[in-house]
Length: 264
Image (spheres, rainbow, N blue to C red):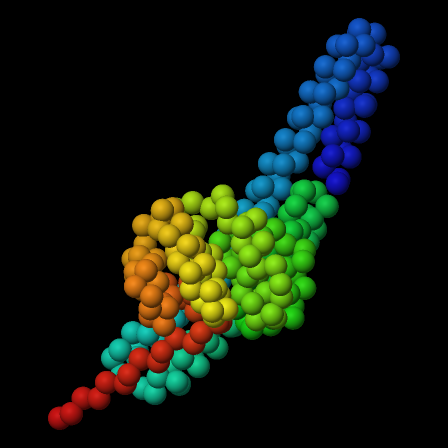
């Protein structure tokens, strides 16, 4: 990494300069050398942080713009009801255009990869999520192998792809990635895993997962699904109440709203 190399070079130069140039004792030369390394490393880190913050802000601006446009279209639909399918197509088109722009902005991080440890993996995680939402699953799968799967969304996307591809190891992956999750971070991964277990005809195991989730977070959907499984009604299990957070995994399609007609 360039940051470490620059810091090491600065430390060596300062050590050589103080010991052989100013004739200080070697231990003081080591002290000033280490101090120089820290100063260089911190300075570079601050510069990189400033640059990454600006790029992240550009991505947020893109997504905020998309959200505003979707809100306007939704308000137009409420005033003038149209075909729900047509409305959804417009929403998807607008959202996809925003995701494409966000992916393009992510390329601005490339010059910084060699200066910041794990930055490339962090950006791959972001790009993976964007490609997943664009339903470019091959590209999302490729990026998953080079990503940091630490947040609830990326963990859930990985589990969803493992389920769709009929891969083994979902149980092991869930236990490894989710054992430290707390609060609202538990909602999506635990709900998804229970849903997968039900699809695999393992309602008792799903009940155990929901019981654990109920201990970790207060959430109405989790409580409702726990009650459904407690009453031996796995068919009543539904993650629809999680809204976009659930449907973003593309495992189920949201129900289209019924069109309201006004009679005069």
